[in-house]
Length: 342
Ligand SMILES: NC(=O)c1ccc[n+]([C@@H]2O[C@H](COP(=O)([O-])OP(=O)(O)OC[C@H]3O[C@@H](n4cnc5c(N)ncnc54)[C@H](O)[C@@H]3O)[C@@H](O)[C@H]2O)c1
Image (cartoon, rainbow, N blue to C red):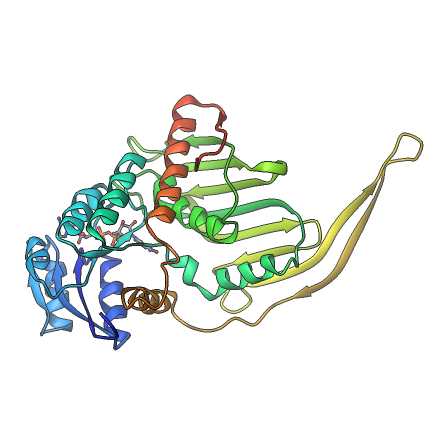
């Protein structure tokens, strides 16, 4: 496949699939040959924008075409497994939307089938390709915040209530994928979730997820479809510094705080905390579309010149965390593992 144009088919062109079509075309290194959707309205949008594209309601047409190198699956999560399985059996590389599958078992089946059929799985954890998350990673890897204390995320807004997944499955994959990218060696040891159903008839619409790692490093994620304001913020705290990430802010998305507290305490002396309140640095961020970097990275992987940053195993880790949350929700208590990713 050395440096040839990559031929792409996109299954599902609702809200997100249209972005995949646009971005793969914009790379100039791939050609979106087919688009498939069940709804005439969505297909018409594609017909109007890209008159040369082959449009089909039956995605099997894409799989029959030997020229297709990559199939993007941007359908609702409940259909990911069946469609992905057929693509892999037709020996197509796939880019599958988050969450990769609805169960760990399905995720493992796809990984096994991909290995057998010698195709690659890419999972669309878009944030991992953003300039902000890349910057956070370099800040952490360079030791600027020191030993880890906590990761605290808020991802809340009004809606969009989903039909087939609760708010955890809808929004938390973003935080889980960011966390796993920043801290690839960490293996979660327990999960506790406080969740409730207020407006959705049968799925949780608010949740607080708490995940514990070794050395008492805690991840807390608040996800909600019932917030009057849209908030997308993460604080990562270490013993040398703290980082604030506000994805809504137009330009100051990351701030590094030289703040902290040191407590001198022994039985003879009084309790004596010393606070550090130093500079705040706002690093400059590169300006690019994460999906564009991701599409180019996938093309590089298909040409054999790079290895996937988010492969099936990374997709599976997110599903393992989501399944662990389901268990904690249904048991209404903290659930412990020796390590969820074992
Ligand atoms: N990476 C991201 O940041 C991001 C953002 C939004 C959504 N997503 C993911 O993208 C996926 C789609 O979400 P959406 O918001 O675009 O949903 P959507 O409902 O707007 O679009 C899904 C489309 O898939 C089509 N579809 C369903 N079954 C099909 C089939 N068998 N063949 C062909 N088309 C079929 C539907 O007709 C619909 O148009 C989900 O997995 C979601 O989690 C990812």
